[in-house]
Length: 419
Image 1 (cartoon, rainbow, N blue to C red):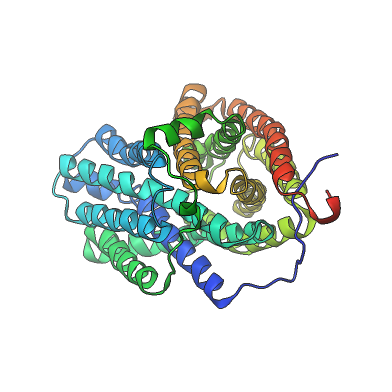
Image 2 (spheres, rainbow, N blue to C red):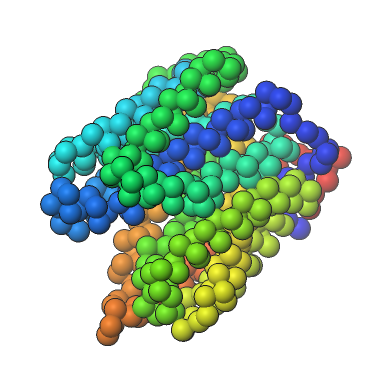
């Protein structure tokens, strides 16, 4: 029998303050994700204007991910020593500064340094946000909260990226960065004015920064959770780097029709995510996670074996695939918020977020080693990559069972209920 987390009162509603917190955390995640994702479509403009090579541009894109991963590890020892509101504002201010520097960059070296700064600060924001969710919301409500916060990705895909590209076409490549800065300043001021201090974790005895980091890394149950997060990211990102090339060269989708797929998938995600959050609360996180895994594995094997396929069929498969992936991510991340002790929450989330970033980078590297380019640009062995990805998802499920059992031992369901 698989133990899971169930909600004691499925009809419990958020207070006004909780609604504000969810909205603000989702909004700042939107700005961070948009900053990360908008750089790729600006590539042709940046390479032409700054006279940089594709390889140099690739370094610019990857610099954010690696600096974000490093910053999470560096911040882990400090994360539980400060008011989470102040901690969030400090790193968000640094993120806004880095984004502004991206907008005023004049050459490759300047832009690279700006992306590193943006990543160093932006990489910590997700972990602080998760710690705040864990501090302010009971375990039974966190799946729903995570569902709403994860909508930031869908909104950035549906509205943010097309609008950012539109701004770039009208006013130049600087405009999307300045737009993100304006949004970020408004969000930061709102948090500064209306968010209450989050200090309950500071009541625990303070430890040496290095000792705190070491103890968090060495905790056996935390290690299992870290491994689960890494596998979750590997399974979710492994096929992504070559998905566009696969659709164009293998499936026969034109470059003109690609935005239709992304917008349709993002719009569907806006509907799916709240449903997944509520479903996790009603039937439990583990049934939702394994249902999502079953759908994701099935659709992944279909997707990576597609030949020339009509556009609307591709859209349907893509939507089903992402619905499965997100149905894994939402309950998994909600479960992760319940793993650490209160005094370790910030450190745990920082390390967890860093591993998520690094695993995404590792997934891209591994995918590049598996996939090869054939005649006419067609990708070969993409179906083999799909099998590796599916296997990683299944292995992640085994780890999730172990992590969830630990969480259930800490937070037993009322009356000893399990699902």
